[in-house]
Length: 436
Image 1 (spheres, rainbow, N blue to C red):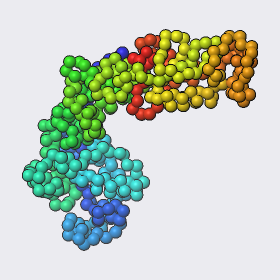
Image 2: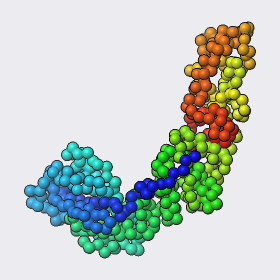
Image 3: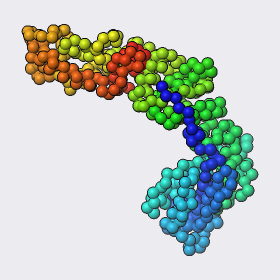
Image 4: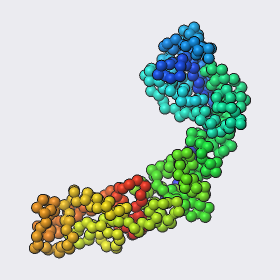
């Protein structure tokens, strides 16, 4: 078992270190399908300090409707000599490079910017985006503001600039709104960009404040164990990336009520880094069988498993058993039902000409009658002496490979070979001795 101490870089990006570009657009209409951008305004901020501003009118490809001119104050005459979006967009992308974009009702602004990128042949950089409307809906109550419009929020947070449907003015007001909202989530334990991106009021404050438990996890495959204040395992799971997976327990992506309850009881998370996902699954099953954590609903009784056994005899065959014995046989499984085990046996028989009869055959069988499988060429006929032990050994080798190659491992408790055969998502596989 390898334990890993997380480095500072693993803990997420502090909001104080994030460069935000707060952007606002004015357009000729409500949809990029038939409308164009007429003005771009943006403010670059980091750590509460303004680093720069970007503002330009944009000459659209069609006249500005009169009611839009009344709303924004931008007329056709004002944009007649302005640069086109083909010129403006690369300048904006350069200004915003490496930042997190912020907008009030970000879906609107992002849709126009992405449409402009497609129209002008520029690849959209895939900015991380923060929507101040979404945050405000969760943080600002009705008794504080009549709605979540930019003008209402600007008054609430005392913005230095009054929004007036001009891009730069609205962007400046949105900066103050962003800072007001960030102060509120900071009081709730949100201090990193990752936490801000995943913030939702559906996650309790107590649950969110325990996020630091996951931030210490390494970005590596392995097993994670949630433990209570006494160190007792509450839940055991596996992940291809321990940090990314455990962080989900503290965000809105975790919707299971029992998991929220489990997180409320958890005081620590133990990471067990593994070389492969398969090794992690083996270790997970061992821990579940040993501790039977109360929040692991599945596989709490691995002793009820069904196994496929390649018998240990001169001419081995496959059989389905419920008990794994201390013999030289190979075992594959476990399976949740006899039907799935039978399907696995059928799959092996399709590709390996193992005998399928159930009688025990002596090492030097010389008499008896062959079955139809021998006539079909799907069995070498050891029962009638048509195949020696040595010749059959090659068939057994191929069958053993089919049973064990996928795992490439042995049971960590009893060291006997076994294979965790694929099956439905969410099921678990203990090892041959029932411990994994």
